[in-house]
Length: 525
View (cartoon, rainbow, N blue to C red):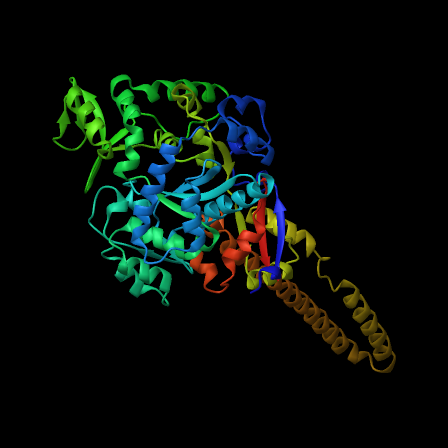
């Protein structure tokens, strides 16, 4: 399918009914949210953001070396990716970052939507600011330990899961057991076959997959679970351990947000750090003058833990509160791209950035989409629906269709009157010729009356059945486009669409505009 064979419709996020009030208020630039972010995401805002971002040549060297080392896991690097890695050494190069967990087989569609938003943001920024370079970055959440969130995906309506007993940071997991998932799939997918069979761990496999799918657009994937990169975090780890620094500031922001009617998305701890080792990622808590690692016998005195932060910062892992700060410390980053809940939780963090004097990035909502393949588009047109109407709930749409197909009640009264009049004429004639025939005429008249009544019921029933079929078609269409009643992008996997449309990714790249702040509907024509 050619990219040009797509009809694109854009609608307001609020019209989908799938986004929070927080996001609606942000997109409409509600004054009450303005204290919780820096610059609103417009192309013009990046001029100020570039001026505010401080990133030394030494930091660039560290980042460049770390990426070169990480990319040795690939046998071949796309020239555009290599060029972007090298451009990071230049003082006029900046990144646009998105992040996500290491979902197997890329997980739900929005994994790819996030990255394409970052790619397109860079393209538009380069046009606006040609004297600068902009590199799209995918931050791999390699240190995340919530395996249950990443071990499954849905392909053509069937769920596939990876079973393993491994624990700790998922990026360090070997890919053992994923070959079973590959064997269960309905067909071979070479990109995933190669990545999962030939990579030493899930981080390397995910880098290989994102590179194969999106490397041609210059995407750089970064793994924060890196000893050289973690050195930048040492002073922040120390402040966290000695002052519970971020917790106080996030607490203040949460109180202010709640007062305005916004619910905090993430919860802060006294210490927003985990202890990290192979097979282990557990919270650090302070009890009885000790720094204890939850669910283990490991503990440190204050002196020991501060020494560890100096010598081995890679043994500390920031949680959801501190990870954004870590990202901004090691990247020349201008904007972070996230889903609705992510953007909302960054609002809780601005005070932390201000206190540490780290530039707060532009917060951009990732592009969202509904993809309607040709079959579903045909069903939609048959039902005389417009793409934007599909977001109404089923009962509302059913009412709408009912009013569209409403017809007069089926009633054969006029036909009965005509036949009754005809039999009256016959009866009159019979009476004149042979009165004994009147009874027979009456009986036949009653039969005709009964037959019409029965036909009336049958025709009515047939029409109702036809309408029920229409409602069933509507129900099926809704189920296909909104699996489990939620947005398609939160459930379906990339392969569900890329298998039938090899140009699925280029179609998204062409359709998505990160700055128009609209929900995108792509319809195959």
